[in-house]
View (cartoon, rainbow, N blue to C red):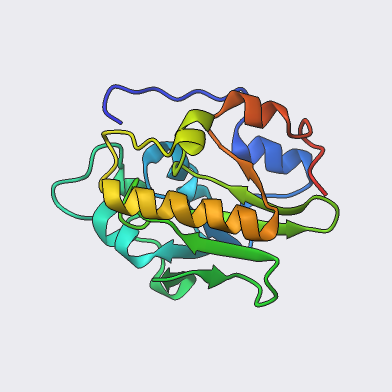
Length: 188
């Protein structure tokens, strides 16, 4: 976003290194949406296959450039290394990792639902919810591209959670992040 500065104490590449990995070891990369605070590391994964919502990519590369998007981060990724998603996408074909269509914040916003052996289903919210209050009260920020699509996506996630018992992690909510194991530990 113009004028915004994002800082992290450890880069994604350095965190991967602590796990004995480098970006070229990552087979698949997907983005909840293409705002720079969520797609800022995209260029590091040039050799990975990107699973990208078609509407999101078209929007991000449109003219004028949408606020919060830096098209240089995603422009030019190899077409043969890009899978265009229009609906939900089962990454491995076994239901363990699913990318779910949840438009509203942006035209092609997605959430990630993973089924973990011990924890069970977990939904990572991207920016569908910016705070726990957005989830609890179905509040829609005024800067979302579509209020009606956001509300439909919120309803979808509420239903998924009721039907599956999924745990929700609101990615911009410090309280949700604090409940996760400290890196390099992970949910199982």
